[in-house]
Length: 441
Figure 1: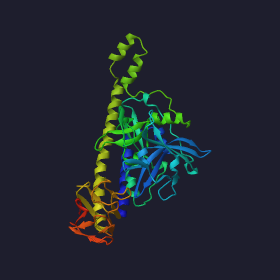
Figure 2: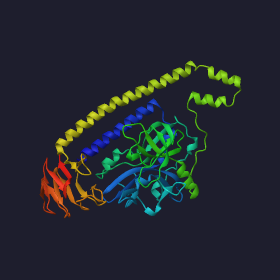
Figure 3: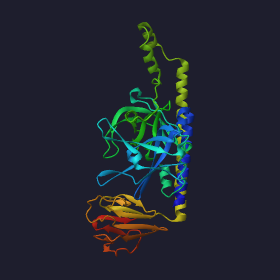
């Protein structure tokens, strides 16, 4: 199974890179955006048995004194349980790759960013003092009052596919050269939402640059390489993605005397209509009439049509090769699965996880405690803190009752605590009563 994960992660990474190259061919990505990868880092967090990775970016870099400030999401370094938000047990910056020693972060060096009412936003600033960040660049920040709908934007970070490989301790490259980006436009401004239960709703930029869980905390850039937002959230099966505005970071840094770079250029006009509007405000009425009625030149029309043609070609070519690679991935997974045996799976048939399917790749603990693999609500009747444990041993699935209060039942019979029992397809096990039930697939 580990081999399957490694192969799938590699192929999907190649697919992302291939699609990125085709997109760049259709629309050149500004060099300053590409160079901004030198300011993006990968964040690793761990809490109990849960571990996840995300992105972050540097807003201040002092190579002489080795002092750096990094921004990421609050939800990237916290866990929500027992009705509250808690810091993860371990937070670090992955240096070069997951086989290298991480840059460990002291929890006292993580500061939540607050809104004007003193409430937590889904943003934090991390202070790091480490020689291994030498050479990383600080990214400039841009206020949201200069943003306009239709502007080109670029989301930078580390794709979530890498999380999949990291779960088995595989080597995951995390250098600036490994940062990927997606392109889009601003589709709406001043949208409010909150990612975590305790985080205050914040103003975001709605855009079409694709992001996922691995991109959380990474920067959203304009075409000048300035940070206009922090990638936070996306709606499944849509082109709607949201990034918290950079204004909150700017205000925090000004209040706490953290030196940052501000982008001070004028808004970039991107369309003929915007250019005309700018001209109208500075010309005489007779000239306004002439400009408004003048048709676009043949050269402009040809350039627009040519750009549409290249963009269309790039899109269809990307789709064509994406379909081929997806089919290849599916066939490869089937082939490798036959070699190494299928991964045991369970499905919830009653209770909180009804109709949800889970693969058992190693050990899976089930209960109410915050550090179990499959966690039930704290007041679930009949379920103990660590109720039972499933284990995949070379494709064979076993279940062990962890001395639960109300017992674990297999096909209607209570099993002996502490004694592993081999499960087979179709077996049904319950936690305490049949109101919490799972079936082996």
